[in-house]
Image (cartoon, rainbow, N blue to C red):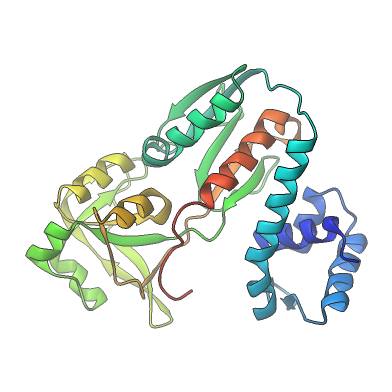
Length: 303
């Protein structure tokens, strides 16, 4: 019989890209984790991971199974929650998050989360400047990008998120869609500045290879929401996180240009200063966000 704990380990390993990291996250020994994966492969008769000396990735069979396993585990968690009364969440939870993601995506999700836990007080800090979790009064942060090494704990929310090229239908009607990467230089690039750094190029994977494409434009901002508003107003092309613009693309307010061109990875994590900060409120928030993220349209184009 397949054990639920083994399935949870498999999903966590796929999220983290490391069996040892998944074992640590679930408080398993490396030997027990390895034995669990071998047990699943033996039970199902298929290889679940492709292993090398430096990397671990899902096999084709594992890729096909993963969404079904996530759905099954989510259903089990909902059943467990319905059967077992949970302790009421109380206290204050201070969250830092990116500007555009917070305003356009997270606010309604957090409102529903707070309605479910009315005794929990949320304090939101919206900024595209990374909060220092060791020095600021923030309990957790939602962050794009691979976490840095250290004592912080990063829980994956959307590990496969990427940047995409978008523009409004009005802009495309006036200026067309770039057919080759070098044509981006002829367009108005709406650039996001991280701090004071103005990007001079956008990195894209075209026909299987990464290219640095020079861009130029008269508009730049250190606030992601401003860049999105400029794009909606038809003022240029933007290179945005898919999570930030998925709803706009689905509504037809923005067009996803050249889905075959892959952008840089922009994985989303929920980060806390250390394991002691993995409180019931933080764990409940992470589970809630994972359910909400699953409702967004998937990133189109070849993977």
